[in-house]
Image 1 (cartoon, protein in one colour):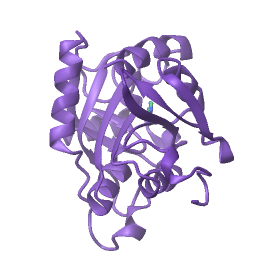
Image 2 (tube, helix red, strand yellow):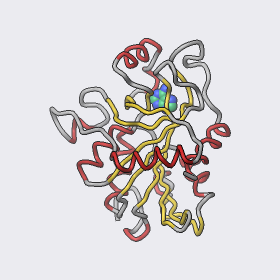
Image 3 (cartoon, helix red, strand yellow):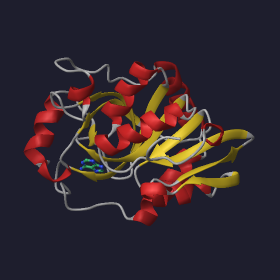
Image 4 (cartoon, protein in one colour):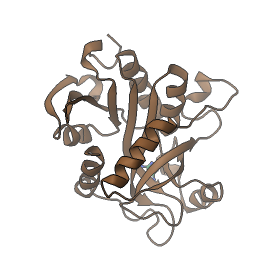
Length: 231
Ligand code: ADE
């Protein structure tokens, strides 16, 4: 049994959704059948059940790459073979609007950031999602009438260090939005051998008049998360 997720291998499904907030595990596990809580240790609430007949685990990864990396590693040790992060993001590209859905096609991070400098000293991680899984997710989103934007995100280690000048710089590099865990997820996926993907909801934007002024409420976010979860 791993150190943080106190579950047994049989209790974690091959298909796993990982979210930062344990409240979102409660929200999304509401659409599962036969949902069973398999971990609460460390506040990393994890639930396994069935969605449309398929076994699924929904796990909390916490905030930031160090917490999330522990959860991704342990989910993999316990049998997860596909991990899809569903989370929030701050819009960077000027066409991103609060409430938009963004599919991450890659993740930038600062040199040695996201804990990856300790995993792969002196090198940059292969921080891209699995292309086949990501294409399938984009097709399913479209089929369900959910519009989305796609492109690279920036995985930040410092939520409160971001400001509009940071957004302008990142936008210049082609980054669509900022979040905190995708680079660690994608890189660990290639290192350990599990498929990854990341679907995000824009909860705030770092550009224009609304820059850092408005944040979607838990209830507003819940609506979009449920639509993504049902995809
Ligand atoms: N998640 C949602 N908004 C974010 C932001 N501005 N920075 C990092 N992660 C986020």
